[in-house]
Amino acid sequence: MMRTNRISGTIAQKAKRILVNGTVSGATTRSLSTTRAALGQKAPNEARAEARAFTQKERGVKSARSGTATVVNLEDANPEYYSSPPNPTGLLSLNAKTATYSNTNRFMQLDEGFLRNLGKSVYPGNLASDFKMFGRPALLYRDGTNDLVQQLLTKRAEKGSSKASVIDGKAGTGKSAELLKLAAVGASSDYLVIYAHSTFPWVDSSRPYAPGSDGTMYVQHELTMELMKTIHGMSKTALAKVPLGKEISFGKRSLGSTMTLLDLVDFAVKVPSVSQDALDHLLEIASKQTEVPVLIAVDDVNTLWTNTLYRDQNDAILPASRLRLPSSFRPFFDGEKAVERGWVVGATSYKRSLFMPQELNSKLHPAPKVPVANPVLAQDPTLAKDTAEAAEANRLSFDVIALDRMSTAETWALMNFYHKVSVISTPVTDALVAKKWVTASGNPREMFNSVTSYF
Amino acid sequence: MLHLLGVNLPDQKVVSVALTYFYGIGPLTARKICSQLSIHQQCKLSELTEGQLNQVSGVLSGMTIENDLKRQVAANVQHLRRIGTYIGKRHAMGMPVHGQNTRNNSKTAKKLNGRMLRRYSTTTNTAFNLQALGVLRSPLSKGL
Image (cartoon, rainbow over all chains, first blue to last red):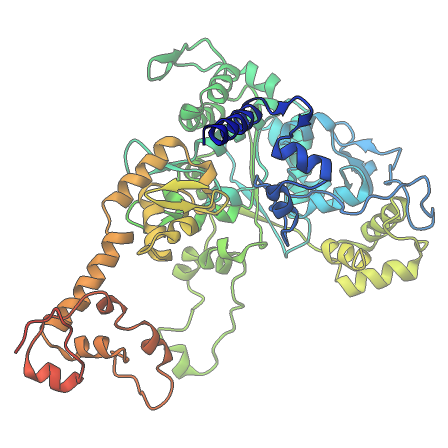
């Protein structure tokens, strides 16, 4: 018994030593993981992971793809189908010197400095896609453009308040382009240019807004600051020439009367919360002074009278008159305010019919008045009558500049340019120009769409 | 993902859409909340500042949503059942409540109605209810 116990004790001690040390003289043991590695087995977790039918994607912010999805190595590409973007040369830069009658029906390039101040790829209307196709921002200097430029130069020389003007025409006739050219010419000369290239973001509830201090009006600091940046970039020289004339205080900070509008705009850009008040002061001072001519250009001007997509704190729809930013410009088009030296010009837009008020539309395009021959119907009070009262009610507070269709000479210049920038490959002939002019009714947008319909 | 009041809200969604992820908030209520806090329509949840998020939380805390609302609805249905109304009985039977035909269809009602009553035992012990429903009494209910 004792011997058995001694033997079992010895075995137990050996086993204990094995468990503690892992090896006993003459005998080696391995850990479980080493054994698996020796046998080439995988750990159960790894095996289970590989056995999944799917892989979990990493979570993260999805980045939107931009540009073309297909990358083409142009060195190996067929030159018949793939070509480098067009780079038309010999284009004049549009400015006050080149904006003359002699350059009519000629494509001119917009100044890079002007575009930089406007913002990256921020072009009014559908011009962004046009410029991308052309390879650079170039616009046709039309007869209508020359008339507008001459009017601008006339108002520069005159002193005395004049009525605002609004460029109106069918969709695609080039209203936004005309306003852009006017702003470019004004910015290149000594004008103080206040150019709002698109006012749809002011009313379509795409940008932040906040209730004002009085509770009834609402402010859009971000949009106002962007506008002030544009004004600062375009008219730095002109702003520096106009003194404030009075002390302006913004809370704790105040600007002295000897400071200039440039200081005011600088301050507004640095402190967005006062940008709206600064804009109001800028418009008030700029409109009353006569030292520097002022050009106020507002595209999509119909948004100043529309109902917006913003809502007040009671969930009621806000009209544009309750937003301070559109309300700053509306008095100039309503005839309540005027610029002493310079011009206030706007352009309508039919791109988003939601923001074209019915009343304004009916005033811009009144129904034809047909005399009522039937004496009974003539006494009907519900029928619109051609009376002085009706005329007064339908009278507009601004002058309308109707932008008509393109002439054949302008169409010829357009087609030539399209051929130069490889938008069309067929040579330009009389027949082609006539065909495009007739089918598009002289509408530049329809002509562009007809030549790019397969792009 | 933004975690607000116990609900995971997707960051990249517009605020008025993200708020509908709460039980008890639909498009109209979400729009009213955005209008009250002057949040523009195209604002995404990730663009909100901390102050605005706190304001949203504050507004939502004052409303009956999520579990509070579920409890309230369940209590309303139980009350109707308890006092022996026609609507309560229809909920208990899992049948349509608003006068729909049951000859055909009524699948949704059979699936969803009365789910708020199934967890709880009915303590109503009137002979009328027992006769009308023909259900077995649960062991927990008091005897007649």
